[in-house]
Picture 1 (cartoon, rainbow, N blue to C red):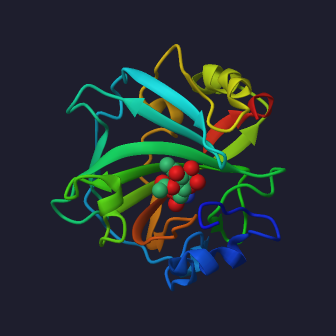
Picture 2: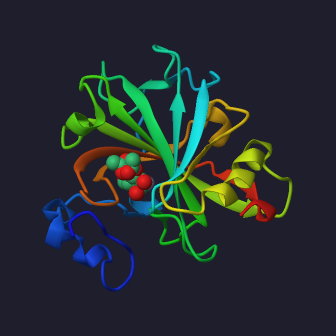
Length: 230
Ligand code: SG4
Ligand code: ZN
């Protein structure tokens, strides 16, 4: 059916366009970022609002494709973003974050840097407040922004902010199961430190419906996680 897609031979990315025409588009993510071809730009600084506020709740859901993390905030206290390569006057609001990982450390991330994959990648999905909801922001010019963070696996130390998170994963093995963190940490704790170096490009959602016009911001500073937390 048009509702399910996968990464195997039968339903892998090469077959998605049968059900989702946009997956054949010309500006599809993921991409390989060739550092030699990157053009250095001077952008205004990025403004991160409310990334350090504690949410009312943090929910981890197994949606059958990934661990999806949603957060509840007091109205008006949602994490927001402006500046940098974003359109002047555009403000983006946090929707959810999720992960992509693989069977081993050479697979996992979606975008590559100089043809190298990282063990995993975190995507913070945000939508422009010009649109009333996420669905209507899709397919609009820079209606959606995804902040991408690569993971590096080290022996030690443990990443303190992923402690409870990793423990919770065993509780959501079944599709559509979910759990709330006992300690709802602010969004920033799950990312790398306020990182100012990034690559940006216009691409797409990496899964069906593969909607284009998505602005990607790939941070150069990785999130460190211990091999004991994988
Ligand atoms: C994952 O499958 C998420 O579970 C999806 O989130 C997400 O779709 C999809 O990836 C594509 O997002 O940042 N990798 S990506 O381009 O955010 C959307 C949900 O299904 C629409 C909520
Ligand atoms: Zn993603």
